[in-house]
Amino acid sequence: MSNDQHLDADSQALAELGYKQELHRGMSGFSNFAVSFSIISILAGCITSYKIALVSGGPSTLVLGWAIVGLMVMAVALAMAEVCSRYPTAGGLYFWAGRLARRNKREWAWYVGWFNFLGEVAVTAAIDFGCASTWVAFANLVWGVEATPQTVFAVFVVIVIAHALLNVFGVNLVSLLSNISAWWHVGGVLVIVGALWILPERHQSVSWTLTGFHNETGWTFLPYVFLMGLLMAQYTYTGYDASAHVAEETKSASVAAPRGIVMSVLVSVIGGFILLYSITASITDNSEQGLSDLAASETGLPPAQIFLDALGSPTVAKFLLFIVCVAQFFCGMASVTANSRMAYAFSRDHALPGSRIWSKVNPRTGTPTNSIWLCVGLSILLATPALFNSTAYLAVTSIAVIGLYIAYVVPVFLRRRSPDFVPGPWNLGRWSALIGWVAVVWVSIICVLFVLPPASPVTVSTFNYAPIAVIVVLIFATVAWLVYGRDTFMQGAKGEQTTKALDEVLDD
Image 1 (cartoon, helix red, strand yellow):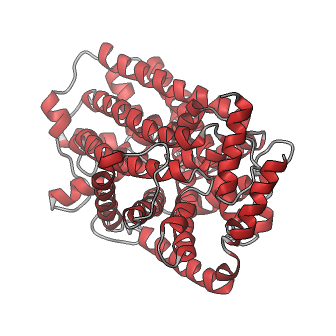
Image 2 (cartoon, rainbow, N blue to C red; image 1 turned 90 degrees about the vertical axis):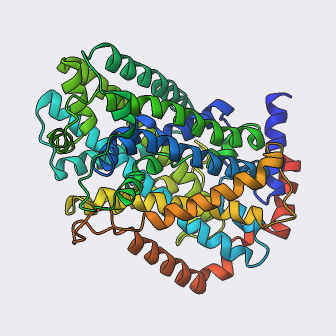
């Protein structure tokens, strides 16, 4: 099939779902995978969130926890991918929910959309805030820059604005940078792992690296401590819905987008395990005090301290951290891409206040420029509490995980409850039901787990603010539905609009 035929088939399939092709469809299947793989970014999540698991379970949570969560997340990704193949639209999760619900279709879509939007904004803020933390740690090593909350926040603002500018230039640039990012992540992991196994004189034992335990949370019930430490892995395994959000910019989207979802998670599970095992095995002092000192490293980033301690060469340590800095920059760029496409689609269906503004597509670049700046602005606003509260980053991380995974699992649940679902060209066959229900159960568990307090005693500074944020979004979404959503939301994806979109495709 020629390239033009691919585009025609994709445009017609999109029109049958009720939308005209407006975004530029310039992404290959590899680029689609690369966007999700870049957002998962094992060099971002595993490095910036390392401390979360280090103080809440230690090596066992870092290494075994990664594998356990990875297995469960694969079930979620597979179940999502099957639905994506049937409905490859930029709206992704909320559109799927609307099509799969038996009753109150628009209400299901509305709430899923708001949780997805919340999660996308939060994960963008968390990724770029983590990126800023790494950059400041790098600056601390190279130039002695002090890692203050004010410095980190200022760098965060610069980074997130840079990501907006890159996305404004067009999907071809984003596609190219995403491809580079995928190979940078693979090559970067190989370089870091190689250095950590070749240069240090000794490593920790296999048994300690896999089962060692460390607890600085204040809680004494060790299974609870271990489960709270899983937030590091669960947070890192987010953002792979990006392959769905850029589906309208991907050729042969009904196959390429679901493959992008699944392969981005699979490669991340394997690569992340190797990376985390190598970093943890390179810890030089495995005593309780040594691990506490590592968590309190002046660099602000425990893996950076491990590089310094284990490699015996500040120059090599700085180079490895530089690899991480670049990978995290790519990660944030891809997150803004997915976030803005979701906001564009949500606005196209008249969900966001000011939808007419956010749903506009720049005719020159084929990108939703206004929604790009909306998402960046909201991410800055959401990360602002980090200036005043040291636990704000953890709270934003929790919001990202909860918001995204609620949005991930609802369409999967509705697909299991929908006897009329017709699978797309990419499907799970007879394994669909088992994998789908495993995904639903796992997400139900983590949504409860990550609204619980991560540290004791519970004070103003250690309180988990994620439940409050979720409740606020629920209240806001409900009020917005009653005020304007029920009159306008998703009216453009029905009946006459679908016919109009098909007619426009045929006329073109």
